[in-house]
Length: 121
Length: 104
Image (cartoon, rainbow over all chains, first blue to last red; front, side):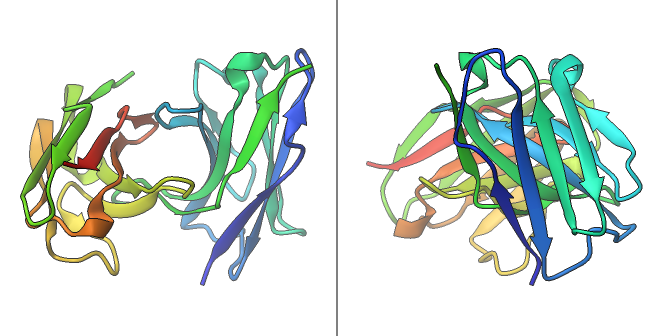
């Protein structure tokens, strides 16, 4: 059973860079049939897609975040990572990683449990 | 960019009742790419319906999805206590804002 687990600091100072890693277990991140994504959810708000990466490193970003986002993949460690630069309080959210099925139906499944990142000094 | 608008924002019903949730797209989308998720407090979203009408593995048949073009619907035929949650629709990189289904 495929599982994803987010890890990283829960507190980031304004103007700094948020860095998170998603470790994939129970399967290989190098599967050609799937991509790997980051999604966030601000407190009491809806889900926002941040970006997606293929195992070969092709990336796709939300245009509203593109200038600050970098997603990378490390197939040797079976994980992928998110960096979000110049953070502000508006970046406070629960951050989820998820597998993206980009085939016939384009959905996210499964998801990690999520990790709360607070931006505050 | 496609905008997904869900209605109502909050739906108050009793167990045993029928729930009808709406997801409207700002432009016509392929039904193959319309997905519904269920999210309970403190949990990650769970895949419910994909391709507008196909239930994910393990999802009870009281959940059904329908629609095409710009209008899609999630129906829960007879609410169970565990169905009270937030439901979100998704199309590629866009999510709706969610509908909160609460116990009346």
